[in-house]
Length: 151
Image 1 (cartoon, helix red, strand yellow):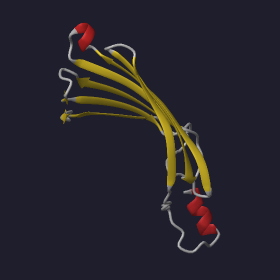
Image 2 (cartoon, helix red, strand yellow):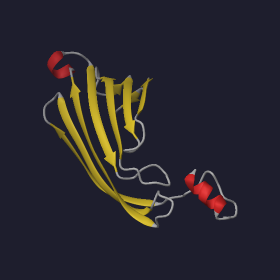
Image 3 (tube, helix red, strand yellow):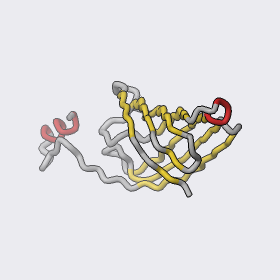
């Protein structure tokens, strides 16, 4: 809104309230998975990116993503066909905004049926998302019935 007001005050032709800022970025990264036991696993990711900046007045920029996921399958130890995963991710790339308000972080809780190795039948997801350091946190949740068969 501030940029729109400045554009109008400065006589910029076709001043727009909403900007269309196309970006093209290249990513490279590493992912690591470790099965510590039949029940417990860890997944980690780290990546960097370079390309058009998502911020309006920057030409190009570097960015990074870091994430970790911890998951537990109750079936091997407790004979309950249920698995849970808790994941968190932090990225330096904010949404397409005019201001730089800090990093974006996201935390996800997933609960899934693990009764068969070749089928996942039900996922329940919970999401806590913080767009940046100045924005109010967003809670989102949902339930998805997804049938996946691995062969």
